[in-house]
Image 1 (cartoon, rainbow, N blue to C red):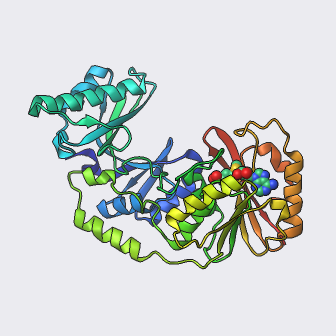
Image 2: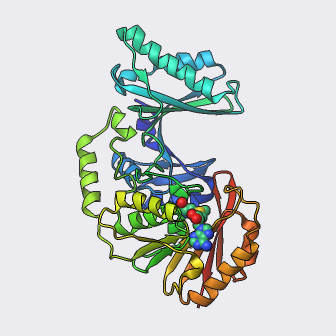
Length: 379
Ligand SMILES: C[S@@+](CC[C@H](N)C(=O)[O-])C[C@H]1O[C@@H](n2cnc3c(N)ncnc32)[C@H](O)[C@@H]1O
């Protein structure tokens, strides 16, 4: 029996800033006995909840199922243990695999080297057994494996998601400073948007916030476009149960009214990208995206406003955006009566320029950016 089978315990990788809402999401999807750890959350689940979490979670990156945890002081020992696992339980020689690793405070001090040693162990295991070996594919392998070594304790896990869940499959094209899908989903979640109040993003860029809002409002599983999941490679994978969960989830998808979700951007090229991306999940074009300078919009009233205005760091603009943010604050005050705005600041020095009293604030990093999400209620 493998470790995850004995304990029923898994590890969800998630950004540290959003662990509170990710934990709530995990519990809603059937996880139990959650506990926070560095960059993730441990939880207990049966197969049904495991499949459901992978299909629906909007906030976590992947779920790892541990196969074996052991003291590991050398790469040779990692290789030896790697050869003791019955890899034919997970894949055959015709299939492909990839190994990802991260190491910290350990004798093996290079992640890539740890991954390479485990990969060698698996390949040699098959070669010695059958004279034939599976191939490596780091983009779309059949089996995604993870090795994590901390203070010389190693855990070998199967990535049950089969690659990061932030890849929803709607990003056909990208723009200069797109927001990650999980960050956008966390903004929709912090906004506690009810899926009924009109939602508008006046700086929509590639349309990530609009797409995540649409998935939430329609109750579309975030991984609905994923053709294979890592848990399908587990020896106890239950195909009948998985088909049942998928069917139940797809039956719950509901339409949204036209114009419920709208966005605009000053840049027409970016608007075309957002339209292309959103058409992937919204073929009947319920999301309305137009080209507009925010300051030409007459009013956005009785609406949930979510946005991520330009912030200059990634875009390498030397220009100071203080006046821009002051004008944005005036716009909100004067033209957005009865709306609530959730503004994501990639550079928090601009918060003070808005000139509005915030009613809540969250620390939310975006890659290496130490960003903030700020809530403003306009009366
Ligand atoms: C940080 S990006 C938004 C990224 C977006 N959240 C995404 O996921 O792709 C900021 C966007 O604001 C737009 N923008 C800049 N000035 C604007 C203005 N005055 N009115 C409307 N959009 C503007 C830019 O074209 C850019 O696409």
